[in-house]
Amino acid sequence: EPEVTQTPSHQVTQMGQEVILRCVPISNHLYFYWYRQILGQKVEFLVSFYNNEISEKSEIFDDQFSVERPDGSNFTLKIRSTKLEDSAMYFCASSEFTGKEETQYFGPGTRLLVL
Amino acid sequence: SQKIEQNSEALNIQEGKTATLTCNYTNYSPAYLQWYRQDPGRGPVFLLLIRENEKEKRKERLKVTFDTTLKQSLFHITASQPADSATYLCAPGFQKLVFGTGTRLLVSP
Image 1 (cartoon, rainbow over the protein chains, first blue to last red):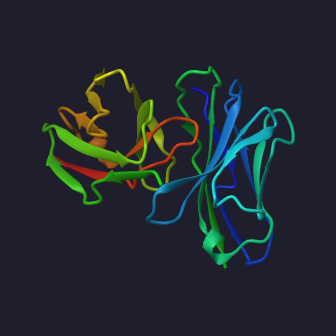
Image 2 (image 1 turned 90 degrees about the horizontal axis):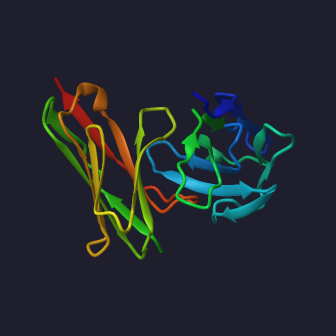
């Protein structure tokens, strides 16, 4: 069964450093998402991406964040200058774009720890 | 702002019983509502989606109801098993999913 994959599974970084989280969505999916979950809190939407551009973003997704689809398979989330409060689990998700209700398939997540 | 409320207290039930989880939402009129399962340290896994014009939807031992007047969805697991122990999340809408905090279900043998 096709699945969303994410790398790395864990990332430890120093405050102020840049990190890039990588995702490979399911191959025939056209809509991509990033969510985050701070430990013990709810899953929060960050951004959705379709047709090589951001379709929607949340208040969390400020200028420190960016997303990119550098090639036909990868989807990345970059945090330019990490802060302590960026420590969280980051989930990538993808869905088909049928114009109807769509299931989002989530990856296993990248646990980011900012020291 | 949109608000999704799920019972934050864990629900403990015995194997074989029916678990019922509640999702209430405010400031929102979603056309769809989805339920996901999340295990510790893992990503959410889609379970069921129900449309606003559907009162009830079933999938194997799972049943979801959607009352747009009460702004509430109920999620039932019949004949529960210890393997059903997880956190269950509701999310009105699709695409930009706004999740509730989730309800942790513990099924004891």
